[in-house]
Image 1: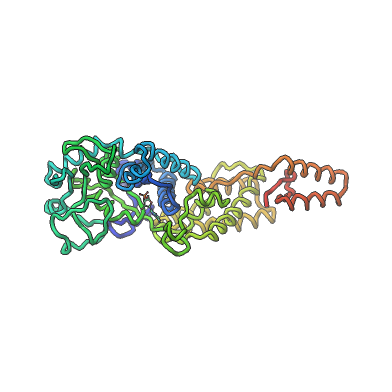
Image 2: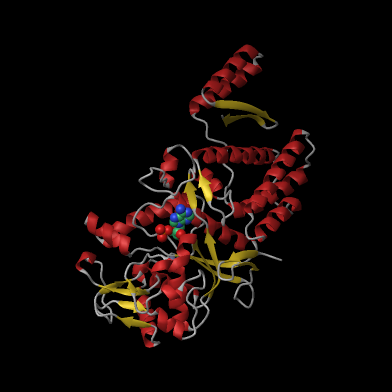
Amino acid sequence: MGLSFFNTLSRTVQEFAPLDPAGKKVGMYCCGPTVYDSAHIGNWRTFVFADLVRRYLEFKGYEVKHVMNITDVEDKIIKRVRETRTTLREFTSQYEAAFLDDLKALGCLEPHVKPRATEYITEIISLIELLIARGIAYKASDGSVYFSIEKYRGCGCNYGQLVNLNFDEMRVGERVASDEYDKESLADFALWKAYVPEDGEVTWDSPWGKGRPGWHIECSAMSMKVLGESFDLHLGGEDLKFPHHEDEIAQSEGATGKPFVKYWLHGAFLLVEGKKMSKSLGNYFTLRDLLAKGFTGREVRYLLLSAHYRGTFNFTIDGLAGARAALARIDECVGKLRELGAPASGPAQSELVTRFTTALDDDLNISAAWAAIFDWVSETNKRLASNSLTLAEAAATLAAWEQVNSVLGIGCVAEAEAPAEIVALLEARQAARKAKDFKRSDEIRDELKAKGWVIEDTPKGPKLKKL
Ligand code: AMP
Ligand code: ZN
């Protein structure tokens, strides 16, 4: 089997075959951030997972159109706009900007299209009109518009494609106004929410009067506008399966009569020190919190990529320290290969690339992929230590690393820039050695060590390395 993913829709691992008859173009939508606060590392686990999917598809030669929406109007946002007495745009733009900065710091490729819900109100209204025309949506007495689950199912459509639902418990026509509800509160959900004074300035005109869209319809409208009525991949965290994604399917398929998405991929939750992340427990981390503790975006990325996307992942600060050590091993190996002066070009060493792709083809089996990488590091270190690597072999193995890294996106840090004082000490040590003053040269070495630097003597001369 080639590339395969666990599809929540079929509950099985399925071979990936894009809808494009030429088998080249892939449309991928990942539900983006709700910009009412800073994204936490749980959110980041999902976005880094989406970045991995996109990078791996590109590595496999697909032409990916990666869409990630910005949810810039929904219940929580409106509440915060009211509390902070700002305008909607003023309020959301600060969190949107911070999100995009973090995205970069984590080495994620920027999605090709980042639609904002507030810029798709016309499309949202048209979609609701279509659902009303098809008899699947109705206007309630307060001016809000609801999706009728009974009418949808009456058309032979299947509500409950991603999760199993108990319709016996459902009271027909019962409505839920909030965007977030659980499976037990199964009910008709809001597509358009009639204006209430608490909405303040956040309102648009519509055929049903003033109001604003529900969260679920936003994603149906944006994804279909940018990627078409049917597209390949839809991603998000596991909490979005119900109601958000189930409702997206119902709205989209109810309006078009066509299958909405071929493969649904859901990432499992991130826990912190074994517990659910929450502000009250004080175990709530944003990327900035971790950067302030001295960790790098690259270390956080490595940690988030270290476990399979479908298993819950327990985040710990010790885990981040482990990520630092693992990256240092890789950096050292790649650094030594680079020092040999071999270009990372020409044919790649096939064993690493073959093991890596076999692992990721299998529903992104990242643990097997890391095992391949660390075996490669050990083997390369052995060959480097015994001086048995030819220049051509070094070039091939570096080329293999570059290929693998185009998927992982963890890069390889350049030598840390040494401050002038440290460089001056290095020069003094060189002068002492030249003068055969080995006592002085050793003293300087110790002094450097005390300041956190070591000197490595390489075939290309001495190099400064941070401890
Ligand atoms: P939100 O900004 O709340 O809409 O969430 C953005 C994305 O983060 C969604 O795909 C969520 O499913 C995902 N998400 C939220 N919390 C977590 C968590 N603890 N672990 C993994 N993903 C999460
Ligand atoms: Zn969404």
